[in-house]
Image (cartoon, rainbow, N blue to C red):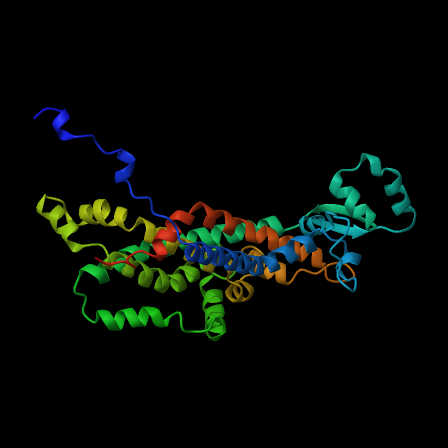
Amino acid sequence: MSFAETGPSKPVTDSIRVDKVSPQAKAFRSVRIILVLLLAGVGLIPIFIMGITSLKSRADIVSVPPKLAFEPTLEGFVFLLTERSQLSGRRLEEAKANAENLGLFEQVALKNGQVINGPSDFVKRLTNSFIISAGSTIFSVTLGVFAAYAFSRFQVPGKDDLLFFILSTRMLPAVVVTIPLFLMYRQLGLYDTHLGMILLYTVFNLSLTTWLLKGFIDEIPLEYEEAALVDGYSRFQAFYKIVLPQAATGIAATTVFAFIFAWNEYAFALMLTSQAARTAPPAIATMQGRGGIEWSAIAAGSLAFLIPVVIITFALRRHLLRGVTFGAIRQ
């Protein structure tokens, strides 16, 4: 058969069907976008207020009605990061005469009639929060992975009762066990120590990590491990090379939740620490100024306290989104 007998070929574009989005679908998508933006805007209002409060002077903060247009100042961050003393009389006049030779923070403090004596302990409190939160998160997630794997893959006697017992540790309000823990920590020498807070947060986070990770591991097909065992892998090798990579997204999501709980915890940190291991939440809440509460410093401290969690959550956002929906679609 010659080429001429086949007849003219149809254009390629005729065989491609172009799917057109209906006007109703476009309108529905626009409505969803608007709703998401509105919800995001409402959720960001407290952060916006906290941000502008940290840049206001004391007079602007207490003004009625509240000012949205104001001259930004670094008073809040100066009050947060430094220890100061009040100047008066001739000492104040001498300090103002030498203001050109002072740094930015010294000039801001001088406008309020104060001189900087040294750094505050807020950076130390923030460092304590990071050490305790990171340590407890590492321990709780590590132990939770092994516990969740055991509950998911082995016939543990009384498994349901044990899982409920583990979950019940999160049902107790912190204030109920604070006094017994305080007495026990004083006897064991764990009061106001990093180790004591890491152990405490690890215990309270373990139920969360175990239950979350068990759900993730349950969704991993058992056939993968059986095939690895047939190929000569040991049980630990199958766990390390098969289960852990498959559960990576769930582990990332669990890590974020465990870290946020330890980072934001207030009651235990207030009652079981004083100086050496005091974390940022009780330090910010009990912050007092000279002659009144320094709201700008509290807002600046809250903003600085929020930034590490935002960075960690943003860095793990892909794993977090995949982790919270892991196993939602079953085949």
